[in-house]
Length: 156
Image 1 (cartoon, rainbow, N blue to C red):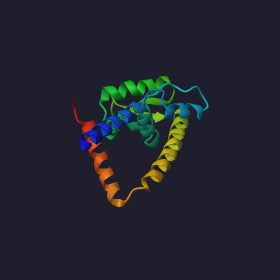
Image 2: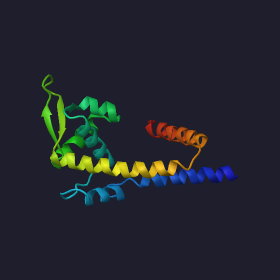
Image 3: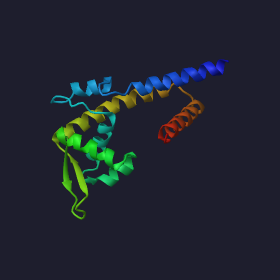
Image 4: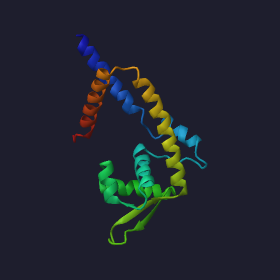
């Protein structure tokens, strides 16, 4: 019975973690406090696309889709929103009339820099917490997280 209780608690914690990600979660509120303009409501996926464009200037849609495992239609909606918010510029690809290339604007660079700063804070906190575990425990945690990722990437 104890394992059944542990299973239920793990599943509940998993859903609590998923629920932490929202359009107005504490990370997005923190970022809103650290940019010089009114914060646009962005999802985590918007942030990841912007971060990819920031670190890969003049990248094309196919590269972004492959790197982030998203569909072209999803990317189009996201990049159009980022353009509306003046976070990216979209240009036609030189060799492909239908292709587009993306580059972060000054505002997009600012958001990306703040986002990187947040990741450094979070990474340091996670690292400190993970130091409490033995090498064997870390291997189990890694295996568990890898399996969670596999579950999340599975199609319904």
